[in-house]
Length: 149
Length: 244
Image (cartoon, each protein chain N blue to C red):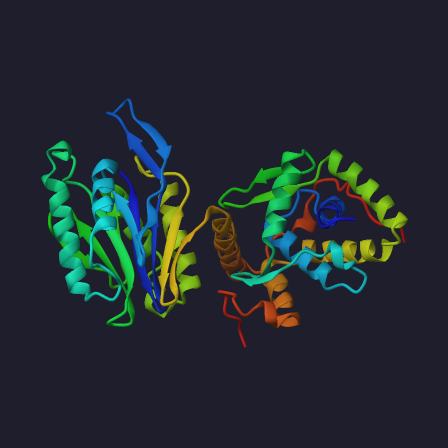
């Protein structure tokens, strides 16, 4: 499975029926890259950015998934960012990707990604960022948000 | 018209603008996207507002001018820039359109080892940028000043360059969103720091836009506590899950 397959599977998982913002996609796939069972070739490469770990490739792949009709882009009032919402097509592709993960003996990784999706969908932004900054301080060095002591 | 802005922070200068160029008479105006922030010559970042042909005339002369570099005394640079602009305005082909052109020009002054930025006006005046400075459409400048006023608790001189980018972006996009005539499109931005200049590409602007959205979202959480999370949606969840 390629990087973008895991991104699409992340979107297809239950937990956020109205979709997720780009920050949660970034943080979710970052946490996945840190998982024990995530295959090396499936990991996006992250750099420490203004809001912690960020991979430009995730932005690129999200755009492609929208262009290919696998995700819907939903504008959010008062924000420049869009939410990326799963559709029936997303869910259908998600099922196929789960089967592929099983065939490639990557179900443990798929389960870890599922747990991450549940976590990032449940957390507020402050909590999510604080968790990532606390666990991976090397990715917080360029954050423009100063952390409380 | 246009909105251009400069802000000096702890370790650099940021120039920003909208990206809309408007042409034609009232009632028959056409808008298109144009680049307003760029590096006209090595070591100098420029933003322009006003008549495009006049601005281009200035930039061409500035590009070709000899003996101007960040190593030059900044007062000499200022005099040279005024001379160049005066020459442009003598051109009969731009008569009548050269009265309302403005520039923000920033560089890292090597003699003083600090970032400097100059607002250059066609009437012969100029202003050194101390914190915020704006140029362009009067109503846009008014709205931008108001937008900065709502963030007056933030001292730009205390911000890092990355933090100042976010504050500048918020000010520019908030101003653009008010819908002032002649101002619109995406935000353009460039930065001057000791190590050099950077014109921020649109792909990188996306990360900055998300950072501003995140900043605003965190402000909301600071006031209201945790806001509704995506998992709290009432929409039926048809998502998939891995087998146990």
